Length: 217
Image (cartoon, rainbow, N blue to C red; front, side):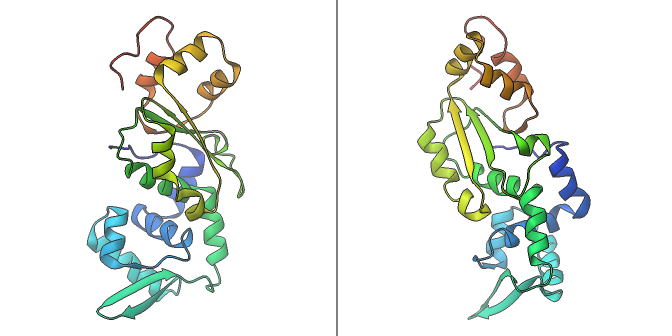
């Protein structure tokens, strides 16, 4: 599944302004998964980034004591150093900005079922999320709720954050819009971070008329 890069969401821009792309991905992976260890090739595959860039960041971060380096047999394993002076500050930054969305994007990319349209709404999309704000995800298409939950089951544990998932078929969304469902209209009118699909699909789905959504998903 091809998921686009993030938009101009205020929370995302904070993370992008503070850290370069690869460093942001490496840091968020470690500080939001403090119990997990990675060896270099595993981390490269997990982040889907170039070997040289990831290796440079890992070397810098371990040299600064932000992550620990432990040799296990022929492999070197890395993990977050929770005793580092700025660990809590880094975790707080990433839990409020780009890190959680990176984690959710990676989880959604593991879905075996093709998503139709998926987007974040609520506090994260508005840029007003606090440290304990849940992440709200809406998926529109033929993917079953069980399939979405299966590929995001680790998210709440990894991010220490609740994930609220809503799954609707295109026809169901169309019906709820036609009946002037207040909640759906509020969600669609607010800021969104698209993880699959985008404005074109939403515009078609939001247009009154029969069968306009056929063939989109």
